[in-house]
Image (tube, rainbow, N blue to C red; front, side, top):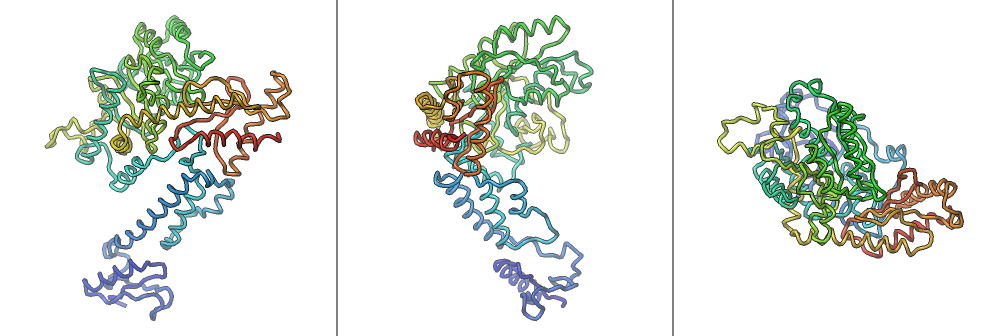
Length: 545
């Protein structure tokens, strides 16, 4: 058997052809195909290549990229057809629902010792697409992101193919410069005339954590080395409508969730500045040390914008770091018509902004911006790893941004935003924001016209919150009985829409009120007809309740 190259039944034609060529070039015998004298599956105990023992990994042939190319081409064709074209077709389902146990059987999740043939792997890919939620579908309104952005999608393909990491310029020269360009532009839009700093990271929750860590470091830099034992009782203030990541950040950093003080909001979901000041005074009188206030621009449920200018007055008075979680609402800064919702943003110390939400960049695409020119990010997070951040490199090491981050490997997410921004221009991004808010306004107006639908409140942003009241409940007066019965309507309608696959709309309770629907309008693919469809479909699914 020495010098014989054997193949199993699962080998692709391209792989066999390539190995024939290798055998010729290296003087080995021709590969022995399945069924050509060795049976349907050869079980040679010596090397299948060149007669070497098969326990020596270095004598095995290298990866066959000629065969891989065929798989990639077939995969890309499938992705374009199933994950792009069909997933955005309004005639297709948003999801094909199965219970976890059913889906486990359909997917065959077990990992085995032997690999599977190419055709089977392509089926695995097709199944992954088939049974996933199509978040790019025109009738997906469940989260704070939606729709397909083709330029950003191509950027994602490119970065995953190249596998760069943004710790040093030598590793990612192109994407380091692109991230820097996007950050400079965002800082300019925020209005920090003297400049600032920032980085893209793995989500808005991490951006909020960065803000909390920087705020603490600015006031108590010794904590970096000595830990929280070197600090007094620190406190963070945020509104009752804030994102839960604020509490998570406090827990992760050892500040403690009980030292996150919740400031009341008004009926529209906006933080009340006078209540903030009262809480600060109260805490200080007890010996606590406030160090940061988190305001929200575009709350998760109601889409409310805290009054940044008034909160900034309070923060300046007490010398507190003001962070704005604008992960959802930051896009209004692109719109001349709507940017007043974030009036005063130029006065804050840091901003979290997710272009993967309203602006539709591919996930993840999350920017953290800080109004600082003293290398605060670097000083706070630097570990000075000598194998990465040598100071005697042959280029300007100020472009090695990795020591500003709590991550080591970091994807070039800014490229997904840079490429679409290049393709569309600022004016088109502005139009997307304006169109989304106009469509939300249309939906709200339609709700007020329809029997059985009731707005929770007039929308300020792209969140439209409303109840559907089935015919059987419409004669009940407002009160506890109606609220109790109404509370059960949205969950049933949600279950039915998911199992039918017709659309996805979120629901939740709020401040003791019954479950209501929260529509989030983002995608420019969405039309008035789609808004009408949502209301018609909810009525169709819930009219018998």
